[in-house]
Length: 302
Ligand code: SF4
Image (cartoon, rainbow, N blue to C red; front, side, top):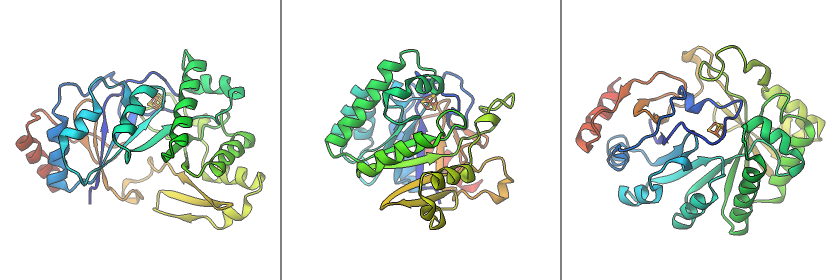
């Protein structure tokens, strides 16, 4: 049953991370402009029973319409909202979390918050203003923690770049010291959106590589006692702090896909799809509520 709607507000980003796969879409420098997102979210809620809306990108805070305004106008109080951001647009992010204290915020952070690792940050993100961007991310995370707001940190494991044991230990220590931080490691996604010439293969770092590092830094017991929360992710209890590994599972036979298929994607080109890496089945051309509702009903029947 579809419960989560992921809206890729734009595929544009101020970074160009080596592992980026733009929510499984080709980067077309597109933005969901002049679309009736308010009607779209309402229809997804009313027709499909969507109860979670996640804003993604690219960098969703590069979107130039007011996200606060959209959430307010949707006016469906039982929807939970979340955002996945690189954290560099601190001003807009702070405004969002102040207006919506329950907004779930996920910041993608490719290295521990330590200025010594700035060159790696630069190499992974391609940021031209990497010192300034890094400072902004650090400030926004500090702001969230100081104000007691919980925050998820997504750390994409990128072999040879941020996977040394000292980096992994440092980011885990950070999560252990800050109970409002939920740390999630992500296996690198490798698919036809980011791996056209096989260039991604060298960055692959999978669960067994990750667990070798955990054992190396003294968490063998956590590896032995790991458990799956859903089939595509694994939890480790590290001295009382839970960390998660989100596994990349595309590329296998779709019939064996462990995804619970509970998400619907709206891409920044206005297409709908029910798998991050799958094809877009429907293009929304008419953004009136009744027309969107019809399209969603068609999707249920597919
Ligand atoms: S910050 Fe996210 S959207 Fe931007 S380039 Fe990096 S992975 Fe892609």
